[in-house]
Image (cartoon, rainbow over all chains, first blue to last red; front, side, top):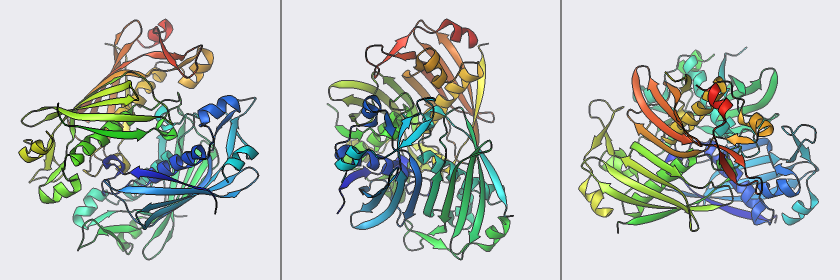
Length: 139
Length: 139
Length: 139
Length: 139
């Protein structure tokens, strides 16, 4: 079993749209929070520390895929179980399973890369090989 | 060629994250806006009208898939070209191509359904067959 | 001492802007969540129940005033202490004090009203006198 | 008459809450966008340029005050007229008047400061005197 962390969200009124259910981009927002929480619970420092010590700015996305199964509304609590399904040379696949009690709400699959700022042009971000020590912390 | 509409976004400071680039759930937010703009430009009334006349609450998502190619920052303008790639009995596939000038920024594929409130339980949303008249307006 | 409730927020990467600190409208979002949490912890049902039983849609704002003292970044936890400072005939003043440990981060003062939908035009919201039973639950 | 700029917002479905009206923190978000648009229309470079050339990170808020007059929903266009009401030594007062056609929707008053990163601790932001050249551009 790969290492799995859990992140909880209490859904708020302002997270919901005129249909009374969660406006779906919020699920992407919460999965992003669950992604960073995964790394921090594995012992990886927050990006604002890593950018100083190693130049790593974060783990932007190459691709997301989310399947929505049930709607959620405010006053409800959902949980996100997060693990890394696959480590590639320069990318990794992070999976998020969102549940409300026993019910599956949605599932997300993210392809992410670690990036540094380009030496010649600080406005450009460049993918780097997955750092071995971070990988070791997360498995 | 399927009918295609265009939606423009001026990216704001508050849309960007500590890495200085657009926080990616905002792309989902803008694609959702482009989705509704597509219907309204095709002559479909806003959901708050349709809910009164026909009980249609909106077009929630079954699935999204987004591929990110380039980053964007604030002060830049992006455009979203939207069309419907496929009409199924109860679902449709909407495509969004996001560009900055000639550059591809990201591409999104959404599977959506039209829904009404359940007659027995108004808190439940039920998928309905794609309304033929709406389909006719959009092709 | 008026009744006071507490609401906690773990600040996320996506809540922060390119300066690396919380994008300030998020404080309004969290105070709004703290406002509803106050009512629910006092035993008031969520708005989606009250709208069915009594027609009450929520407590929109007439005015907000927020003073910002210190910045906050992601990975930090803040707490919001909420109480009602004053009940008027048709409005009430809700106060939110946001802290990080012992430090004051910001303070918000909200003027809110209870609203119902207008009988003649469901798109219009109308302020109603503060319901006495809700006031009793909250003091 | 002080220099005034105009910023337009097409309100989206996802900007609205279960009551069907704009979730109010979005007004703060749009006023922040109008604030930066004001400076850029006056000829001030975006913060990501100023941080490189002069160390100026942005104009965070000391205080906001917003009065809400009418509700707005999606499919509607609002306009924000922005000007600077007062320049102090280290702060300035920026006013935003939000309208829909001839109707006043809300009015915001912001107290802001220009900040740089602290020389000794880059995570701290320090207010600086209002730069005279920026003030000259904006009046």
